[in-house]
Every structure is written in structure tokens, then in C-alpha cells.
Image (spheres, rainbow, N blue to C red):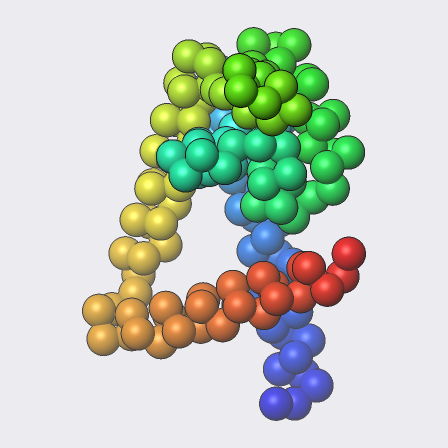
Length: 154
């Protein structure tokens, strides 16, 4: 791979990352959701992803989001104050605290899921079925790289 190709790919990553964040933020503003940040929304999404496995504890959520427990505590405190999350102590072990979404969290999470579906449908509508294996293999490679490297950079 040439230096020019590396520069082009780097510029593409930066541009697409910023465009996705901007698109999500703008979409939520248009839906009238302005009281929570995109980061807070992703915390809610993580809680929903982990709750079915019973892994909706602070340490597991922080690990899932690749953020520090301190950063997660700040976000959860804000979401509790705003009425999106609750802390629930376990009766048999008070040291175990689970993070539980409220009805308000359920509503914004459904909107967020809908936006992601629209995004994937829109992006994938331009990709031929014959190219799908290459796309999936490429995305898997990106996921493996970033997943492996996020833990080593802490």
C-alpha cells in the first residue's frame, strides 16, 4: 500500500466517523430529543445490549463501551437525574448494583434503533449482493483491529 493510499484511507475514516456522529446528533434533534447527549444515548444502548445476559453492572457496561468506570459513573449519574436509568441493588448482595432503564430510556432506545436501521439500509442499498462478502470481511477486520487494540491502549 502506498503512502497516498494510506492517507486517503485515513482521511476517509476521519470523515466517515465524524459524519456518522453528526448524522446521529442531527437526527435526534429533528426528533425533538435534546435533553441527552449522544454519549448518554450510547450508554442507554449498552445497558439494553447487556441486560438480557444479566451483565448490566457498571464494570460490564464500562468494558462494553471501552470507557473508564469513572466516565461511566458520570454518565449514569446524569441519566439517573434525567430519569432514563435507575440503580437497583440486589437483595442477596447489596454490593451488586444493576443499571436498569426506565420507560423514557426505552422510548429513546427504540428511536435510536430505528435510526441505525435506516442508516444501515441506506448504506447497504448501494452495495451489490455479490460484494457483501467483501464488505462483511472488511468490517470484521476493522472490528477485530479496534477491539483488540482498545484494551491494549488503556
